[in-house]
Image (cartoon, rainbow, N blue to C red; front, side, top):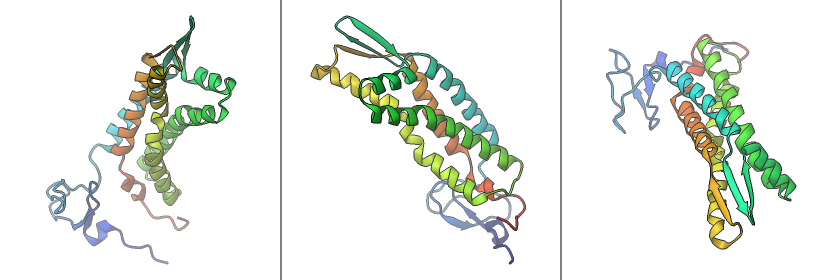
Length: 210
């Protein structure tokens, strides 16, 4: 069975901002503006690999102090505890909140690591022009974008616990530098996924097994 024609062969180009499909200009990618939103049209986002790799590496560097430094200090009746992400998960489990401990562990430990692995896999496979599992890789990218916002759960937990001080549940709750690094990690990984162009997945030669 013959492969379906691509947009390039049909002279079409899609806007990466609003999704409008337009007739591509003959002179090149950068001379045409989207008739719907006015954004400059590109067949592929410029400097995708450089920008995405830079943001991804920066996010990984921020992720190290985010896990090493404490993110929150709680004080009650003279007892002061500084908790990192992992020690906070353990404390939630010990204090009788295993469900919340699992949620925080997944959102704060597993999700960022899986995002690093997923984006790295997409970048390497696209750079090599691989035709391996294109549909699955496209679904993986959509999944990375979908779960990206849930990685801020630790920041929300610290904010929630700080608010509970007003109701007398804790004597003192204070955010520590680790939460800043964790927030930077989440923001940088979100920017990295936004900079990546999923249309690169479909570049290269067709594979009959795809």
